[in-house]
Length: 162
Image 1 (cartoon, one colour):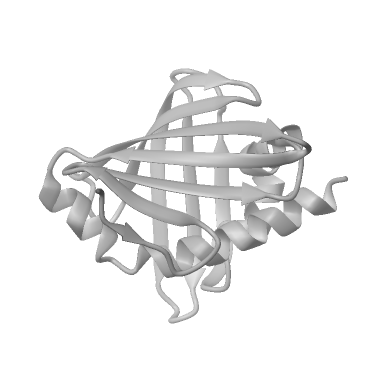
Image 2 (tube, rainbow, N blue to C red):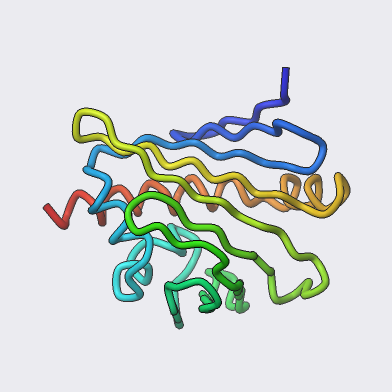
């Protein structure tokens, strides 16, 4: 069985030596969760969670397009991530690279899927790292606490769009 770390409403597992899977159900239909996930003005409202304030969001949502999110963390330092989209299926699936700008040589690939049942949406994020060391660094970075908070805020934003 894959190791699991769950400290919130999202379930985090490690299905292989190089992957992390995050699964979270939202009390909102898929089109609203996808909209909140991909619209810069809405990303600004949820991406930092309780850990800071989003200061920049750029989204060019198409294969070959890029994305970049920046936040000023509560400790006063800046955190930035960026990547390039390789696949976009509106409302269903997004595949992109993910780079933490403080570690630009560590490139991961994220596949985000959105499925709906009875008006509720399940988002599954599969992050593929180049090595087990990179995956473990990601898991041990404290990302889960911030991610849990961000996804809680994402649900609030998606629900507010009804």
